[in-house]
Length: 432
Image (cartoon, rainbow, N blue to C red):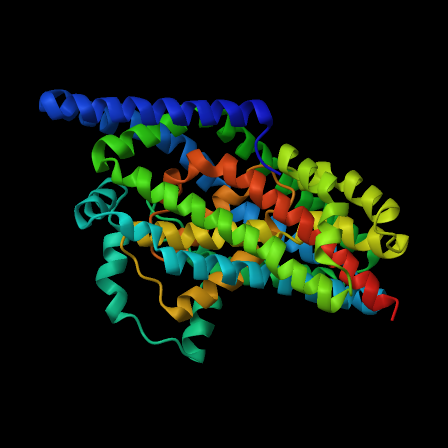
């Protein structure tokens, strides 16, 4: 689902080197301020543009990738009426699973508030370095109209659809909300086509997704150089506060992921499937290890099907339907991570998202998780789009890129484990 092992290792090593170099620079700056000032200037002139090349390659694919991936995901559902109760239960549980996960992540970020560990001066420095979008959002927060039905309609259905998601300037991403709704409409309309035309539409959308995925792949090749450059630049300009903030963020995400997998899913197993959670997780432990080590839902699918058949004794028809679709759609760990990143980066930039905005964020995180399923590194451009939607500089994802690999292993484990639990619950309900 994300970066290959060798590339991921290089990114982690690059992150470590960038952090070490930045800390050494700050230490030298205590005795020789001119050196620190010079390296800050080098960061602005060299390292920041290098990081921008990486980030903007991701930004390039936001619009086509969101549209093609989400529309294709809807089209490939086929005729839900024909699939009957199996599809209804499956997709309801998929949505509930991801929504609960995002809520857990948002609650964790609201409790820990990792972005608020930065002092006001550091936040001001971040806003100065990454553009004025966050500062403008903070200034206009109290001027925004209250959340109402008319406001929601305007947010999702502007008069000028293409103008809304294309954006009004070269320096800003457009609004992703109308694009997501339009993609769902296109997918729903595609379901009404004849089988032959529907397959052609899905093939075309999948082709666009594959091309955009290729561009993401090009960007990821730059990550081992861009990530250390960006983290070095941020630390030498903002200070070591950013490291404490990142540590709290990673810990919060890890705990939230653990709560969802071993808490929420245990409740589902006990009350919806009538199974012992402790015995169940022992049975699927090899699958969780596979998911953790490969960081790939798709690579874990053969193991999922084998364990469902041999260990859990699930119905072949249920497992064969739920698990393959779940490997591309039921991404609770990814949805949780996206919600956490947006809220964390917003906090770091001093943009407070109210309850209504966080409810919208929950819905968009679920939809985005579905849209990026199975696409290597695909969550990064979509997170950038979500950040822009809430008035936060999309370049802010650069803060978390270095720790993404660690969290990717954890969220993939949650994705795969939740797929198996969902299949088990559906199987138990279909047998009643």
